Amino acid sequence: MGRLGRFRRWVGTPLRRRSHRFRVDAHSLALTRGDWATEVLWSQVEAVILYRGPAADGRVVCRLLLVPVPDAMLDRGLVHAPNPVDGRPCRVLLDLAKVKDTPDQIAATLTTYGGARFLDHRPA
Image: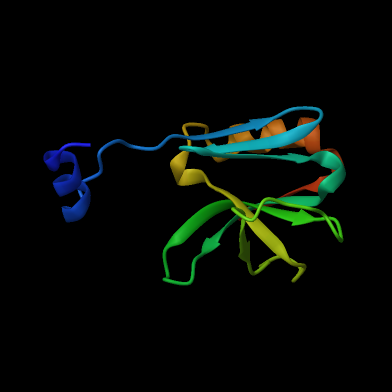
């Protein structure tokens, strides 16, 4: 990396925007953030919650939260989060502001593949 590249990183100018990709199918949920990727099999999922509500800083956010089955071996890159629905331990899978798909599109896909595991917790 040349001097200009190091300088831009030092002053905080992003060199490139990292992509966030989310895939759902009959076998798993897969998430990619830049160079990091993980896949969670449905057998490791107790619930997936589509949550829209206030964040700790007061903003309104729409997030996809994962409630794993007990003793599930999940990637350490998944951040722990408070569960605003029922208090079970959960992880943040995705901030929906960082993907192209709308919350309604994601909800439809999770309804199809997640079945009873999917909880849509957005205000009507």
